[in-house]
Every structure is written in structure tokens, then in C-alpha cells.
Length: 179
Ligand SMILES: [Cu+2]
Image (cartoon, rainbow, N blue to C red):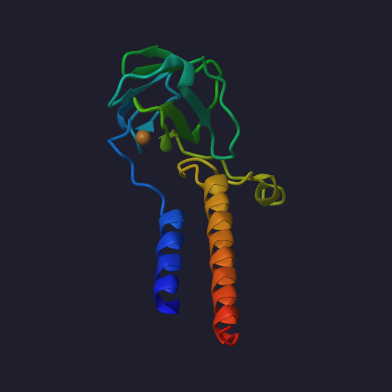
């Protein structure tokens, strides 16, 4: 009985903790100009990203940052089918630039990622005293699992507590002499 209950609790915990696999293929970046890892002599005037699925202009976000995580001035994305284009409006110089995107798939699930390209000699040497403190935490490229994972863990803990209570109740009933 206890063993069966333990197996049931374990199964429930796993079911809650293991995130559901995506039902279908999600949107993804298929190509870009400049390409990932490209080395350019000058900052491009426009950046074009091509995706596997048509984009929803309302939910298409592109940002460009330099190695110090400073945003580069760009236009709002211009969406044409599966293609998104932004114009670089600022006049940044040599650096390593990261293009971060956030789009939605046809099923409504968000997809985000990023890639980098280098202009000229790359990132200028950072000032040693403030660079470490000023750098914000990197957030690009990771799946949005933070709050969801916490909620799942809380539910799993609650399930274990409830199951534990049931076992304790069952044991206390069992020890009591039969009436
Ligand atoms: Cu999905």
C-alpha cells in the first residue's frame, strides 16, 4: 500500500515537474543578414531576419545591443511575411553586436533567441573599474521558464505534503486497534 502510494506520488511529482514537450514545431530563425558570426567592416544600415513561419507584426520584437549591453538605436521592425527588417538609426562603431528577437509561433507560443556579429576590431576594451558592476544579467537566448518552474515546484511540494499527510493518517488508523 505504502509502496504503491509512494509510486503514485513520484509519478505525480514527475508529471508536474517535467514540462510538456512542444506539440508542434515552433517558429525559428532560418537565416539573417548579417549572418551569425559575420565580421563586417562597418555597421550595417539594416538587419534582416528570416523565420520559418510568418510573423505577427504585433508580437515581433528585435533589439540590438553592443558588448556592453547598450541598446543600439534601431527602427521598429518592418514585417513582411516571415521576414523582419530593422534599420539601424544610430551610428555605432566597432563592436560585437547581439541581435535578440522575440516572435510568436503559429500556435501562439513565444520563441526568442539571439545571435552576434562583429564589426571592425570588435568590442572596445572595457573600463576595468566599472565594467563588471555595470553589466546587467544576461537574459537573451534562454527559455522563459522562471516563474513557471517555481509554480510547478510549489505544486509538487504541495502534492508531496498532501500525500505525506495521507500516509500519516493511514498509518495512524492502522495502528489503532480495530473497534
Ligand atoms: Cu507551441
